Image (cartoon, rainbow, N blue to C red; front, side, top):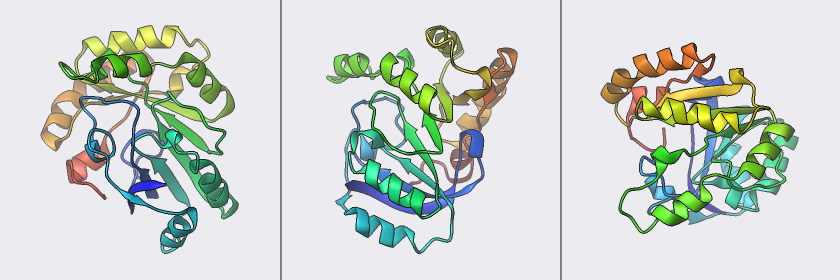
Length: 225
């Protein structure tokens, strides 16, 4: 597995915001969101090839039951299946962060899906067509929300993005509103504060959840925290 980083921190988004967790971040992605906050796993993927045994040995140093398998797009990595299985057998609670465009028969306690809307497409880049062709995979979304405990996290940059979320959700009536989270697109604490008020208001108005981005508030764009 190509691993960008392994670290212990707190979860910054969604249902388990504030929960101490071990993050295992794979490198490599099939999308190129312009606002990607881990470009070292997508636009310029970097990392070290690690065996499952090496990963398990490193994470054993942390006395922590919560694990987040993230990326990049971790569901591109076949070895995610045996890694998650082994962690589960050791008593770990597994959250998998995915864009919901690729499927694997992986075990997970929470599937944390971040669907990519039109607002994610890069502008004037060679990736525009490929990104738009890949960013929406309804069959994968339906399988994930059917077979896992799940949350859906939507990145909101402008007020018009909220209508796009509603349009996206109309395609999936099986999705429970309490599992839908809106979170501001931001890489600095100042930008996060500016957007949070109206994003929170729009989420509440529609019966959805608001997700903070606690890691941005605390650490900005620093990696490994």
